[in-house]
Image (tube, rainbow, N blue to C red; front, side):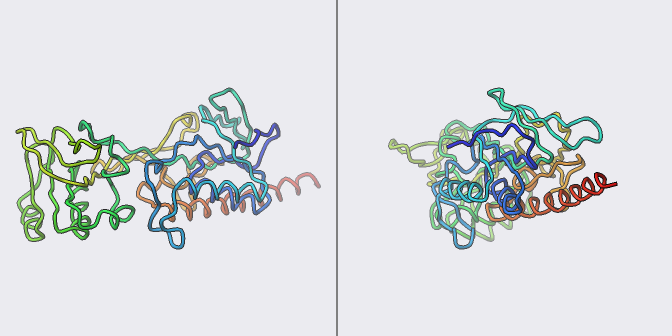
Length: 320
């Protein structure tokens, strides 16, 4: 279901229909703001069967969370429109209005913008790896750890952050193998791994192997050896989704150790671009669903507060 795009200027357009975007829209709609959520329908956690680590809603299917969220936003008068944003144009200097263009040519004008586009996981280019992403290939010990406890787990190193990644997954299983790949592992880290019973394999991984039924069974090394594993943990590179937002000029920043790239933001999701806020994984790369939703709510409340001041200033000017 997709709502029609309004012809009149709305208070806020929310770009992204995940937890952050929907919760921001909910706060705005409950404040009687006209708000439109543009949802591309491509959530990051689409491959996952369940969402975890969110109090009360732990175990809920991601698509059910979004379905309920859209329903609640609509219940307060908000609109949720299916579409892909290809351009957002700021108004002339001093004019806090933004023109939003969708891929099918539809256009919308909004006084303020909340960017909640989420992020994209960039995986190592290992044949067979992407096929199991969100299933037997996991990234977050808090999102997936309980479900893979006690399994033979392998950690595919992608950078310095993978060392800590391994220690977190060691909490979940006694059978952990760390594949160094092209990363360096110093003597001190090797000693710490040995103390925790983490086996280190330095031979490069060339392929992820299936068991013939489609289930992950291990990894093949450059020397031909296959190391049996049921689960692989990968610290993917995390990159904020920026499609269609170039003209806004939002500043991006690279995080240390190659972790990823995010939109820079301040308190309540404020940015250096007047009239634009950002919330969720687009600016907080490691936020889980609950944290992303909370950030969206905070941004929505802040937007409403500043719109209230702007509306009062306009009303005063009209009476003088």
